[in-house]
Image (tube, rainbow, N blue to C red; front, side):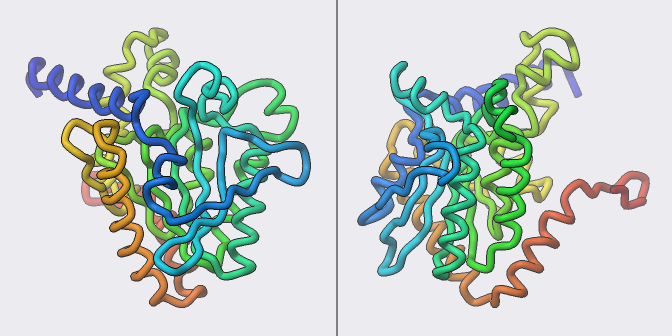
Length: 280
């Protein structure tokens, strides 16, 4: 690849990263406002406290009820601090588990909206079992009998994002990103220089188009011209139409087969071919 072409690709990928992090991009509560006729938020993990970095509750949708769970960032310094910049603590994931359990008990489909730089990395979160909380959320999602749809609406960072994305159908908005690590952290580890984040972003293949090609996600959803931050209502309409289509498809499949297909879907990830051989 020519150097100039490589730099152009690098620039294009970084523009996607910046759009995914745009401060005016619609967050979970914005989508809820535009997509659903009513929403009742349910708070608390019934163990420690409520975590504002994850919101969830019952939404009225097309004559039915959905359980909607998503990461939530803030718009100004006060709300960003309150919501911990969208980085959940263990109680946030335990809240998500509780709401998923309610949905499963009453046969309510689950929609998750993913938008976090990652789970909170602080000492207090580790003391309260951050790793176990994420793992148990993954286990809960894997075992759900009800249809599940996950949408990466902004940043999808590491296990903090994956915890809400083990779904039957995983969608990504066009300018969102999804990766095992942030480009800055990746660059700091590999090159001892977070300034190489642009290169890391390209190497990680974290854009929606790359991940669809790698079969990590199922579909890319188009955004309004210039990005979802330009028109929240239009972005919500696209997501709403995709959700209706996926739920209609999933509801024709029985719970046992749906869970098997969910397992197979994620089991296939991490397989690639080299010199005609399939490697794991």
